[in-house]
Image (cartoon, rainbow, N blue to C red):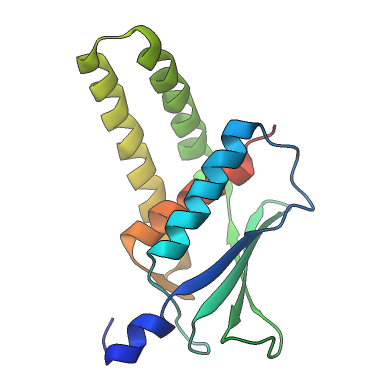
Length: 165
């Protein structure tokens, strides 16, 4: 990103809300993961509409059929309709399934496995998370410019929205 001092404050999310209307009841662990991901995302992110109004932005995420919906409001007040970006999640199904499987293995390994095995599983987990983050960034690139750290946090939220209970 280029520009002066003001760009950093404008090219960021200041609020992230996950639409709970369509979601199922989450376990305390999943609810905690969601809160941490949202907190981390608000604390540090780079987010800018490619051909839209300048930020800062307020983001509402929700699932609609088989798409992740980004509703993005720009500025500080409720001015006009939010921008709507729909991202098909079908291309993410395999990586999310693999990521969940490795996460289960990782959490089970923490209980009994030696540190070297836990590290190896964690490297695989992080690799899948990175792969999903790159896919997410590429899928949004025409409409939303984000950095890798922001893509990682958004991928975490996509995964949380995929958990069935």
